[in-house]
Length: 542
Image (cartoon, rainbow, N blue to C red; front, side):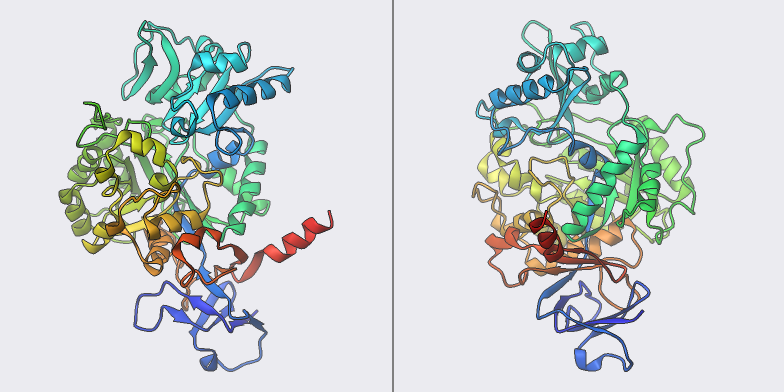
């Protein structure tokens, strides 16, 4: 059924011609946009007209890098973040509380801890966690997702002792006596996983549906699932969730290390169809770690140390991944934060011919804290996609300050520089792998990109600020293109009628108040799937 949306300030993300960036009206039919322009130019005909009341409309957000299944699972775990947990002592108390509520036993899990936000300004260790629970195993995931902390019981179950060697690309942190501290970095973080009970398909699907509702309330219409940091893929969970009402489009990337030795693993052209609601986009490799965890492989040492982090994937893994991608035509995604990790992947893929026929970037690089001039130039020349997360430095500023000097802080995540040099850049959150209470929130992410001030007011590089229009284009049109979503991210004829109606004019509001803007309504396929006013009314009468 045709429907027109009129009397709005509609930001289209359409950069194809002058004057197309803002329009007054949309005409939709069959989930697609038929017309975008001035209200007086709407095609003739009888169809309902929905008055937007002068409100601002944007294309639905496309989060080009997140981990939805993990984010959904974390909603049922201890949130090791302010304002609930502000210190290791409060973390111990929270573990003890959960322990008291689990008389039947089982693992105690938590997510999001960041030592920079704890009053003690250090990482928890096995002995801290033992104070909360010595008889039940405890398993906490750091905000960056690249480090985990477990208690003595978990180490015992996994058989990790002072004699256990570090795995390739990982580290079992040890104290001055050589004993494991319970902190497991990079590939060592997986050593405990085989001893944990697996999640059931039913619980995972139910959590995904709940997450889909949160995403619609944030105006997010599509996400990329950048893979589980453990064995297995997530395709079947999304398939089932869609049958039960999950509305977002999803591009999935599979962690290559867990599939490269499986002779039956394949990605068919049908599964890669860019018009599918749930599609498989390609492979993911982990090149290094995180800045806040001091495991990102930097070009220069961390502040006050001689350490530069370390690489993670092996040369063999990369070569086999490239061979697979070229054979199937799928994308290759590589997590690379530090300069050395970025150079490593860019230099290796640069000589290769584009194996996707230009439909999507054949290579996408994730995070990009300190890309070298050469890496930026080569990426721009080849059209490689860069997916960055402004929220990182914004909300993890305490550990960033500990690990980098102030001048260096102002030059990392060089968004303006990368754009000016022609890089195909997009924005995303990496939720839940960051220290933010609602990690998928797009407005805090936008605020960081536009203001370049951290949550504590620290200047994190005014020269690298983005204007709000550019930031929105990177969060919609460019995110959709880098992630392989066809017909999404722009409000113009032929594209999906996926958009959000906002509480305030995002394009004139004080940039320091961008995080106060809220989504009033979200439409997917021209159908309203979220209304903040309806939700408020329901809550009033409960």
